[in-house]
Amino acid sequence: MEDIGKLILHEDLKPEFQRELPVGMERLIEIDPFVDSSSAHSDFWLENIWKGGMYFNELSDYGQDMAEYVKGKTFLDLGCGRAGNVARTASALKAKKYIGVDVWRSNNPNNRIILESEMPAYFVQGDILNFLARRGTSDGTAFFSAGIDAFSFKNFRDYLSAVYQEMNRLAKSGDVAFSVGLNDINPEKAGFRLNGKGIYVFP
Image (cartoon, rainbow, N blue to C red; front, side, top):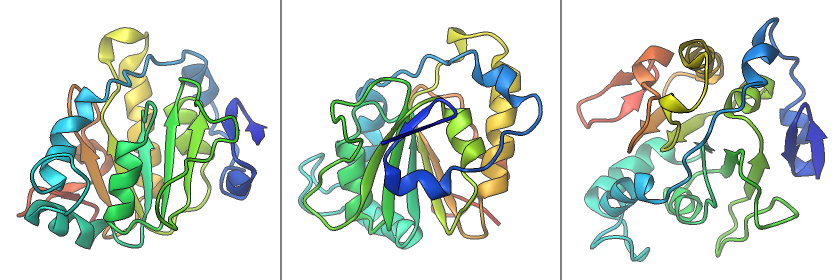
């Protein structure tokens, strides 16, 4: 496990998070956001992904549509809480890798999420903006968020603006973003556009 700029992450991820922070960004990151990790925020999305609700047996038609956009991408869960269900869903959607980030501590001291699949899955303890800004590489990404609360800390508008800037930097054509529940992240402000299937896709 490595501690890089207040990010606690598995050593496997170290090469991906060596980027220096842009000037002035540390000021925003010092004010840690409260990340609402309630699973209820992501449940509605999960229930639509799986046929018959969250039984994790078979993807719904909507879930199969999602898989077309997620397959082969790194799934970044921004405000992941205890992860688990979303990580399992990312695996079913054929993501290449799952990385969840949250200010809450992981139950797993090794920061590795164990799934019944071969997809690597990791937990990073840290701030969402710090996580995005230090990520220096991107080879296809699905961004997922279900939990930033606007009322929880100062300079929220500046913070979100920086989050959008970093999402835009990392995104490549064909990347997707999902923002569900009581959430303030608007993928359109990061450059994503809603397509005919109701999915935010980066042009």
